[in-house]
Image (cartoon, rainbow, N blue to C red):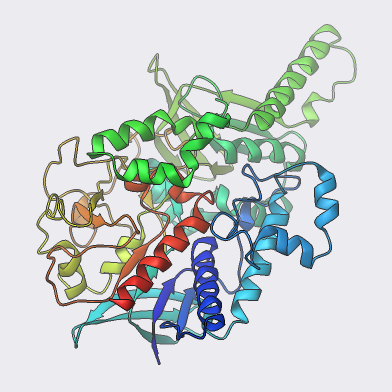
Length: 550
């Protein structure tokens, strides 16, 4: 079967696209019109719908209004809004009685699952779970088709889907600090590492199988790291300790004031995209970083400080009455290590982290049973899916969008106001997914106006960009580029409607390829968040349908 649209991934972004398409289909049906897209397929690696299961901590709350759901900002009367979900579950009045616009994460995750189940019942939508996409390539027949190869995660059976259009919404992959990457990739060391994205689903088994107290390092100073710190203290065996390691001088509060929050409004997407050059967009992004990156919600921040203060109180009581029964040896000890970065690692029974104070350059070494990484996500791994059909990046699809590995910057300046989306990996952070990691340097040096630093989520700056330890034969260093296959191009071009644009305007390739959740550099800070998904999905669907009519 040939599909009108194939979607890679079925998280909130593509779920919202499915909702927008269904709404347009229903609108056409009521008007007695033919709807041009009746065969839509989404491929999802996980075997069922789930939304951040690893961070569904007890009592955790959303940090945005429930009105920023799959549909409300686009179509408040939609059957797929959060309010429709509450009404269907007979909880609308109890939710109102809570007196809060922010549901728990558990409830919002259940809403998304409810919407997913509802979408899958619609006749124009097919969702195939347990399908790991292994390659994407173009078919050079007629005006072109897109071929998507996938593997069943249970049976290992390969399959191919043919589509007229493609939308890539794979979500983020854990970002692993370069000094820790070799240990992370070493299967024998897996038990020592957790990324916060899998914390809730992993930590119970680790604690259950622990023979005694644990020494834990939490890397990062953002929201997820702070929430994990609070949760860990109540979970760990008596006598355990936790070091929170970060480069900043202190944990910083997120700015969620009304004026600052306007940066997440749909109008801000227009503002960001229409800025005259990348330097201006980078300036705005930097100005508002404290709304989302490496910062902590004030309520969570107060809870962390109260925990540290209570620990100091216990210390004072124990110092004043040294002969009294001391319960401190049984409680989990919290240590904050600000202004520190990881410069080298080693391992034997435990993991050794060599830490350097970024102000004094003093070195210390610590040993840990467990490292928890609150180092955020890489949003650019989809590029390897687009190019995985060719080790030399010279497939037809890559030539359409990148040319013959020549920088395409400026080639689209007069067409659709296209913006270059830099692929420069200037953070020297490496993402991990099902394929071998690839470092993607530009094919030439980029000017500041052409290069935008890769996005990070949470606080990924608690690691040194280069780590060496010549005294240890197993010390970690950044792998050389020769380790990997191919050289990636420096940029793609993206339309306002999130559509990739060919290098040459007259190329005979009609399928549209859209990307979601990875264009923060061109469309603004809200691109990786829930804030604009309902509006963005509407824009993508409108653009897709307009190309059908044309």
